[in-house]
Length: 119
Image (cartoon, rainbow, N blue to C red; front, side, top):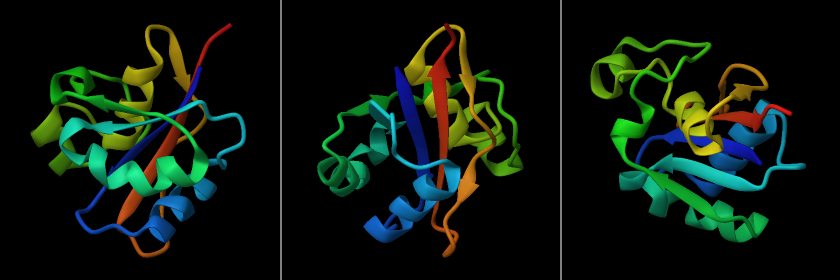
């Protein structure tokens, strides 16, 4: 399983989501998209374009996930350093690892990170 996790602002465009994913390593091999349940609808256009399912996570699933990057605001809200990184890790499951730190879209409205299950 390879999951692209996303964090994004309300109103982030499909282009911004695609850009964040491309900067994180691209969609090749990705099997699922993941984000907070409250924002899952915002991933719909990307999920449809890529023909991938969305894993909607409750905020508790992100708490304590070890991330490569850290936002004070995200830490205060969700108990982890990055929504995108934590969503990717939580959705992939125990033993998952990030391919790299979250990537930010050029317009700054979306972030993406990719995690994969360890062999």
